[in-house]
Image 1 (cartoon, helix red, strand yellow):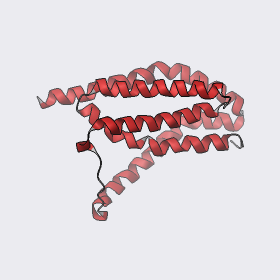
Image 2 (cartoon, helix red, strand yellow):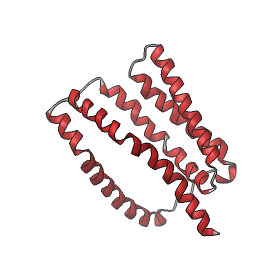
Image 3 (spheres, helix red, strand yellow):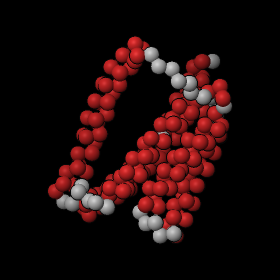
Length: 173
């Protein structure tokens, strides 16, 4: 977008992508073992801490960085809590064999291509609005879009997280 103010925000926002994958494996383990109560507790507690930390940082005058830093701290806290509660038998181990990676890399290459095409096709409207109309109208469009999609984005993960493991568990019986 050519905005200098976004440089610092984007740097700290990008750090979140290094932290979030650390908890992904543990979330799947909790879902597979149908430990939704503990999963919900960790999600609720980390969201509560993010909100509290955001309010404190705003009060201290950190501005927009309050939201970014709070999300980063929340992602670290969430990953730590998942790691703490998952149990030692589920800790990841380091194993690497280059010959076994060939199929994974081939599969990942096509997945990456699909994700890039999907991202571009679903965000082309935002790219075009920001290019031709500027950041102000892009912001208005983004907020309107988020209001419309909010119910779907909140209900879909809840249903998916409960339905798939439950059906899998029933099928094993």
